[in-house]
Amino acid sequence: MPYRFPEDGHGPYRLFRGLERASVDRYHRTLDDPASAQQERLRAILGLASPTAFGREHGLRPELGLDRFREQVPVREFDELAPWMDRVHAGEERVLTTSGVKSLLKTSGTTGASKLLPVTEPYAAEVKAGQDLWRLALIRDHEAVTKGSALTVTSPAEEGRLPSGIPYGSNTGRMQDEQPLMVRLRFPIPSAVQHIGDAEARIYALLRFALQARISTLTTANPSTVLMLCRKLQEHRESLGRDLAAGTCREGPARELKLPWRARLRLRRTPVPTDWRPARLWPLATVNCWKGGPARFFLDRFPEALGGDVPVREVGLTASEGYFAVPMTDGDEGGVAWLGGHVLEFLDDDDTPHWAWELETGRTYRLVITTSAGLCRYDLNDLVEVTGHAGRAPILRFVRKGANVLSVTGEKVSEDQLVRAMTALSHLHDAVGFTLGVRMAEVPVYQLAIEGPHRPELAAALDRALQEGNVEYASKRETRLGPLELVPLSDGTYARHRRMLVEGGAPDGQVKDVLLAVDATAWDHLRSADRRP
Image 1 (tube, rainbow, N blue to C red):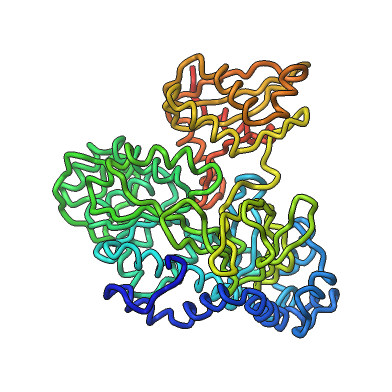
Image 2: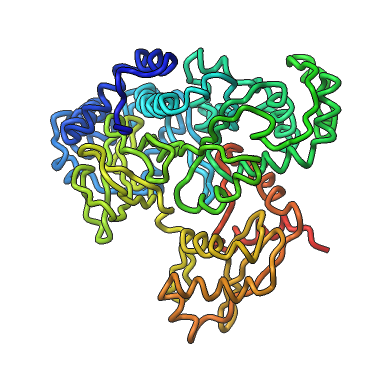
């Protein structure tokens, strides 16, 4: 069965399975008895939370049952936790949990302001166990990933410190730093590369080191980052070729790097390739990234950009707040809910909460989490679809952010509706990126900003496709909305926009392309990256 871990298998799988036996056993128990697994996790979390300011205010005790816990703690969003979070950021102890705060995770802030979320030892262990299961399933199905180097695109685990002295940084960097030694030894990119300030020089240096390695797997959160790497390989191939031949890193964007930085890193002469597509450069066994929600548009472009049909493995239903579902196949069904880590709840359309074993296949729910980092009944605002079950545990696929919709007259156009329409209309465009926004007027008009070749008839075709996929949009188009318009963007707009976000503090490995400009700021940021005459 693909949703379990057999005892037998090839050598690397058996080795890692032995190392992760405790997590594997716990995972198997969650498939058979999810209610007991979740009660066990709640007991451990409340044991850490009950002697705190938050715990005392809510009457938390380790012996609380799941349903009683639900009665005593309301569902909250991040802003409602601000009074407690401010005290955590200031360095106060025993606010949300008795475990010490090791660091703070900076969220990407793509659909809102960045947040700083606490990391504790128990929380890190919860996340690591889920990630270990993901890696084990990947190795089980793809032995070839163990035969080469693992290229990952992350941001630094520490980007700065608050006045209280608590460090903050990205979750991708933190998770990479906490990998087992035998995994870290397979990373071909020196950690110093993460700390290069200029985004273009950082990507160039990453590619330079990757090109002298034998990459068997590529991992990054966002699929658009994979396409960006493919474009940068083509854009800088002459400079990279000279650096490879000379055993240096001083051409192209690397010209701005100081000599002491280069001197600390191990560079060697490497044959210059003739085909710069990743699947032709390396024995690439898998690419690992998000596959849910709007990712489909980018995934459809992988074979051409990579230079081959490389299996794509979902990295998991995961966020800075935690790790929630473990993909067990290369399919698009999502991942098995990780019920041995956090406590998971699911709100239906009426905001009625359900436990994981109560979910129905085909239904969509909003995810609420409780973690040992002090988040109790925290509304993640992620919509997930139940695509099936593994034993009694649900299989979850990310759909979209709950509030990430465009709606000026009640039409509620979502990311997944836009992506489905643009994917169906791929014969009319070869977009590098696109963003849907609204031009406000007496009769508002939807506008599609698009970078890349496209035909003029795309506007009318997309307008029709949105009407066919959204009855509310179709209704409003009859009376309240004007015909959709196209806004061409200059070449490199999305690369510049990404660089602006990173330079503004967003974690490089988690930056997402903005598909819906849900407020004027998002639209203005994108247009400021456009360099049309």
